Amino acid sequence: MANFVLVHGAWHGGWCYRDTAVALRAAGHRVLTPTHAGLGERAHQASPSITLADHVQDVVGCIEAEELDDVILCGHSYGGMVITGVADRIPDRIRTLVFLDAFVPDDGDSLISLIQQALPPEVGAQFVAGFRGAARENNRGMTAPIPAAMFNVKAENQPWVERRCVPQSLATFEMPLLLNNGGRDAVASRVFFLADGWDPSPFRYFADKYGSAEGWSLVKFPCGHDVMVDMPGELAAELARLA
Image (cartoon, rainbow, N blue to C red):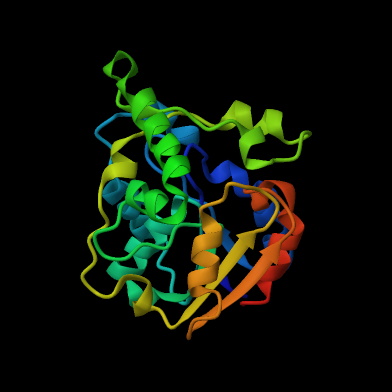
């Protein structure tokens, strides 16, 4: 039995791993799907003051409260920022890091700075302008979810994703990740899962950069960005190979 902690991306919640978690638990693994403050079933806590550091602490707190060790820690999209912070905080509890179509930050990077690195300048600028423009509306400080169709989520799954996604604090995208212990490099085993069925994807940049690097491996899924929604069984099977 392995310990899996599956970390969701922006605007989502632990709900998005529902079917992947079911498959892993059926195989005898322990699976936790924590939800970040202000999102999912915790949407009532939403606030523009919530930061990336808060979301890192959410996951650190979950692992510590459940007294987990030897964790396979998977982060989707924005969740790559979170799991890198978690690995920096509690590296002794993490066995493997899985970046699921996710950002891979270095010390001082923010999600917004990485978008600008990973996409052509005009495309990156459009994403950033969209995030900041939504946050300025009514001075709410919250970013609106990107439509599921833009991530090439399967048509039959789009209503569920659209129904469950909620706005997220812009501060979580703008706050730089500050690392003290090497971040992802504090964990010897690292995997990048690329969703190979959508564009413009900033995550091809990270797959190209890290997919063949020492200490990394690369797996590709023929689907849109929300792999855990469109290919939950296949994702569970690849995760289980790491157990």
